[in-house]
Image (cartoon, rainbow, N blue to C red; front, side, top):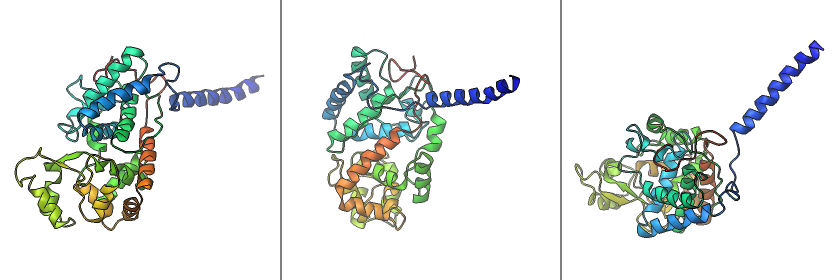
Length: 318
């Protein structure tokens, strides 16, 4: 009897560990709100479309906001918090740069009217990024849902984990691989730079001192970005169709017309050259891969189950 009891203990522990593992790693699902808030997605879509119709650049801002959320301790809405002095919004990569917070707040307000305390801010941001893509002729995808919101920001993680616009190809590859994303995912996600704008200080060194850049392109960009002033002056990341999510970004890289150094390194004699060339020739392949990579990015370390909380307002913990 005693020996049977001792044999039972490891089996019980194993079952408990499996149960804990399955609950702590709950799967996201596209049907998560079907019963608890069936009109959540349509409500978010209406709110986000209204915001982008007022300022088309917001589409790029929302996609970037989702990216900067997911790359910092997972897709948990931590970037939205500003109720403490030490938050991710004030990190150098986000300060006076990350935008779209008010659109997420607006969407949350509308969702709270119909389903109070049900839909997380992290999920609203993930859905908003998809709806933003569609609004600028980009692809759609099925958003997996069920994320919960963090109760703290992670400014120090933001400083260490977000990609830099000056980084080399191996450094960028390592950053994305650390988040479970492949080289192909990285190149596809970089295609979001076919929309949006960059501040002068992020590309000044490239247009004045870069060697791997088209001379005419550099000259044009210098006119809007002085050598020693105008840090916040803006330039479109892609000139041909700056308000449309398409493959012209990759065509520009082939011509050495990437605005940021971290853009051009994708086509500079390295391992991603073939992917850039493929996307420049096949827009449908790029759009399909972009959608797939956005889904993968949305899977990075979500809070699920009983972890975190469902914030009542997105910029402050309950």
